[in-house]
Length: 315
Image (cartoon, rainbow, N blue to C red):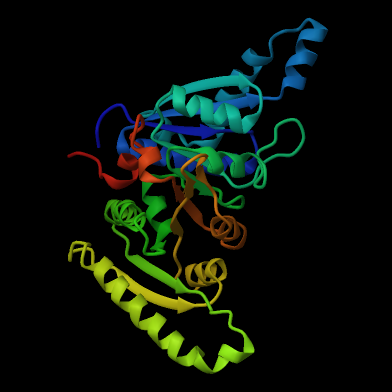
């Protein structure tokens, strides 16, 4: 991995963000990357600070962040880290995305749930908005995951990499990233393709068995062609399942003990990357690490988002 890589971790001082911080620190330590910790203060807190004449909110927040980090990370995980603390004021999602661009971050690591009240970072709000507009990969950690204490703990948490693919043009990049994670952690990879049920009228119901057989045959052919692009040394498992896509992904993740799901984010020519309904449902259903990937065209420049997940440390 090239020098100069950077990981951004938003913190709201909740137990959930403590877990995200530990994952971010483990990733930064593994790749020798810079770790930027960000706290976004609510404008109302800033106004109250100025109204009372105290005007030390940012300084106090930095102290809180230093203390939070010291408590969250064991001593052995802190020494080698290149840490950078940032405190801003505004809307959390906007500030996270702005700092990500400003710091040229390669990855954002954040929890799916967090605090309510003045400092909000819970799924359905901040995390969802970041996923809708990010141009770099986002690792979303489960709200109940306390995070690893050592880099070695990440392998035990991941266990297997699940890659649900739709066999479109975006699949190649998704597999490249998943393969990088699998190789870096030395864990198996499972490629999953879900065939959704056909909705047919009563008059067409008689033709359904033939249609389903043809769809299965085509899916198997497409999956095999995709496998042919993956180096033989990886030897990924493959699975074709039937049902509602998000539900099947969550079920397979649980049944096959996959600790991380590598998913793509949808894109629009006019609006850029957007989180689709499948990704949203998987985040709600699967209490796993989710590595969400924006489209390659959006992620490749000016950032180097894919590098962090694909490459292993040099030496």
